[in-house]
Length: 112
Image (cartoon, rainbow, N blue to C red; front, side, top):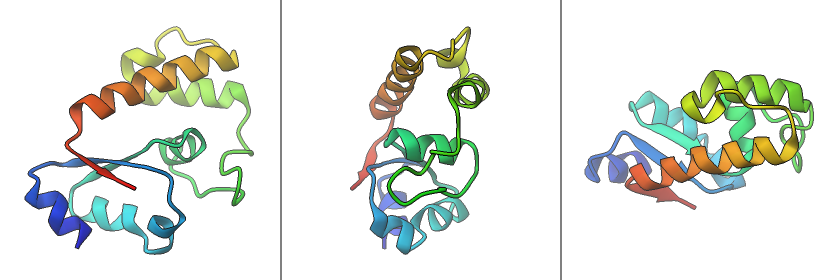
């Protein structure tokens, strides 16, 4: 149903708000199989998604990543938003906000 509604909206990407239900119904793989790119908006979920990994903890999905690993991941995945990025938490947060702000502005469908 969600894939059909997203396709009806004429988009190939969606913004996702943190939801255990979407994990339980395996929404991301269903969207990806249909050619729709989901973007996680929860910071830890976004990190795990960018790394193409499974969450390592129910409450803190990216606890296995240190800030150097996150910086390197952001540099590789965020295009201009990751250029010259340091491993300081305020800088990582600022880069994530700018990246997600762009996704919110260019994406027609959000799921929560």
